Length: 504
Ligand code: NAI
Ligand code: MG
Image (tube, rainbow, N blue to C red; front, side, top):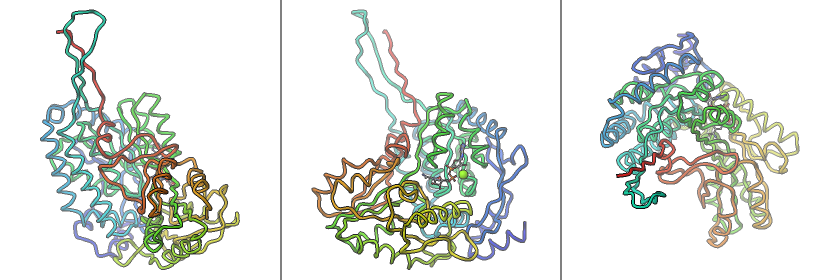
């Protein structure tokens, strides 16, 4: 292992802190302890650009989840956490944000190494957006309010006092995907900490490294042990054990719709609160009046950002027939020019997909589309050589019943089709079981406003795509999920409301 390890790590210009982190043995954080899995088993962590082994992490299972849930409950009940003033919790979260910012380059390198994404994108989005999100959320810590309410009991003349309290929901089980490993961890953990909860976090088996580094920073920021526990492991073992654990008070999940449904069922058996941020097949609708040069750039970013491994990826392009050819040729041109390479190479525009499994899944979709009669005007399959690279692909001549048009591909694959009028654009846009996001590209305010209410999507962007903000609710219609992250509503997902009625 040590030879292989040095091979992958030696190739890149890495900060000493990243080299040190990669080369030291990885343990999970349970309570105050860094531990191996009870089974002693491990999971290989690969560099998706070279397919070489980087390191291993514990393969946590049911016993480890059990221990972590117990540690999280102990922390939840301990005065060291429970009795902290909101101002103190807020300060800790802000300190954690400062620490993450101070280690931004290191965390971005770790993310690029583990996931394959561009290190510059990782620094701006994965780390930068995570820090902004934390600082925004930290402010809510001191602003969680109940209300006083005038009530009318059935016995006349009684004096009453009634109020509501917002209380932390308890122990949160957070299960996250591999596309934005650190950002997803922070999207779950931060609002839980704001509300006063404690957390058991299970990162994706493909990308566990930044969550373990994050856990170190959480302790450094002064959070009491047990407030955050991290169990690395597979979904069907550690993830499933966490979702069905009766000691978990809320499950927060981001990932595939199929696993989301399974998690929802498991949670419902215990009536565990659950929020699900799931898949998408988001349309990008280009009207004939759009500013095409700007739109083409935005559309290419809409699908190819993070290699299409984005829940809101603009994976279906619908352009008015008058401008269809110009738009798809423009996006195909951008696709063909993208430079593929390791995320740690600063000149790389698109890195590898996260795993061999994802490369094969995405290429399987492309093949199925081509077999069904679609035509690739850019890309069309995997790139040759080492690494899980897939060429940015644009498919035309598609039909609505093709798998490439109705199913989430989660890779750099765009399907494009023309429309003739607004009704047809709406019908096509709403034609999948998903409803996460959509974008409209137009300068005609009247058209834009007539379109917005008709789109089945949790977020609608106009002349933009994939822009998420901590202050704006985010989540899905239809099979794209349940609940809204971001904004104050995100805090409410981690609280229970207690009504108090007193006769005085
Ligand atoms: P996944 O949904 O299996 O993985 C997400 C997380 O769920 C991981 O931490 C995984 O370990 C965990 N998990 C898996 N099975 C579980 C179970 N039975 N119980 C509890 N936790 C479980 O996604 P996967 O397999 O990595 O990717 C497959 C497809 O899912 C992708 O091609 C893409 O279409 C979709 N996906 C969507 C994401 C999104 O943000 N909407 C993120 C990741 C994947
Ligand atoms: Mg999986």
